[in-house]
Image: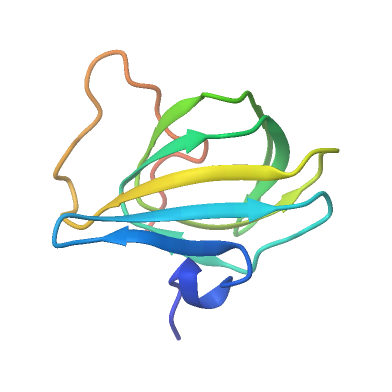
Length: 119
């Protein structure tokens, strides 16, 4: 079974660029929308809107609130999420195709879920 978000959640994720090094995804949703489980390789996330959402992975859940213009390094992970706020979500993900190609540098904020077991 594919856990590619552009396949499992095609109503929210759209591929806007892909080459040998990266795949760039645009993500949108509205309050109350929830994704099914999917996975991302090491990625950079750039928020185009402020939003509040619940991220879930296995038995773990975390509520996050991010402002417009936030940039985060996200290590490879599997999760699903729900928009629990009052605003739509609009995000760009730059997924790296070579695992470990760009480890976090000093001062880079780790992803909200962090490294996942078995990834």
